[in-house]
Image (tube, rainbow over the protein chains, first blue to last red):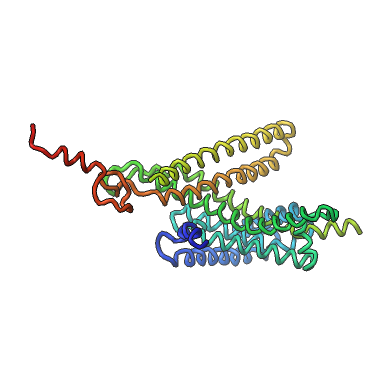
Length: 242
Length: 110
C-alpha cells in the first residue's frame, strides 16, 4: 500500500529547499503578530484612526458574523481559532502572489492545516456534547432496530468522511494555489525572445490569482465553521427540547 | 507502451469530463443567483457571497482532478529524451525497431 502513496508523497517534495515552508510560515506568523501588536496600540481611543486597527476590526467583524450566522450564538467561543486559520491561509496565499514562496503551494503545509482543523473540530465536539454524545453523532439519526445494518453502514461512512474532509480541505487549497503557480510558469515559458528572456504572459493571471487567494481563504474558513456547526449542533436541539 | 498511451488518454478524458460537469454546475448556480438577485435586489450582497462560495465548491472538484492529472503526467516519459525509435528510455531496447530497414538501406547503390 505504501507504494501507492509514493506519487502523492512525491508531490510533497518542495521544489527548492526543504526549509522553505518552515521559514516562510514563520515569516507569515511574525507578520500577523506584528500587525496585531500595531493594531492594539490604536485601541486606546474611542474612535480608532490607526488604519491597521480599523483593518483588524473589519476582519474581526467579518469572522464574528461568519461564526455566529453559521454556528449559532454559541459560536463566539470559536472565533479565535477561526480568525487564526483565516489570517494564516490568507497571508500564505498572498505570499505566492508577491513572487515569494507560497507555503500553501506545498501539500505538506495544507495537509497539516487540514489535519489540525479536523482534530480541533473533533475535540470541540467532545467538549460540547460529551464523549457519549460525540460517538452518538456518528451513528446518525435514531432509527428502529430493523434498520440496524443501515445504522452500522452510516457509522462507517461518517468515519470515512472525516478522513475525506482532511483530504478534500488540503487538496482544494493546495490544488488552487499550486495550480495557479504552475499555469503561470507554463505561460511564462511559452514565448522566448532570447534564451534568457521570455514574454511575461503570466501577468494576465495576477487578477485571477488575487481572486483565488482570497476566495480559497474564505472557503477554508467557511468549511471550518460548517464542520464546527455540524459537531456542536446537538446542544441546540437538546436546549430546544427542554 | 500501451499503459502509457492509456495514461495519456485518461489524463485528457478526466480533465475534459470534469470541466464539463463543472461548467454545467457553475452555470446552474449562476442561473439561480441571477434569478434571486433580480427578484430581490436588496439582498444582492448576501446572494453574491453565497454564489462565490458555491462556485468555489464546484471548482474544487475540478481542482482535485487537476491534481490527479499532474500526478499522472509525471508518469509519462519525456519526449525530448526518447531515442530514435520513439520508445521511452526506460525500456530495455538496445536497437531501434526499424533495425532491419536501416540495414537494408545501408548499400552503395545510387
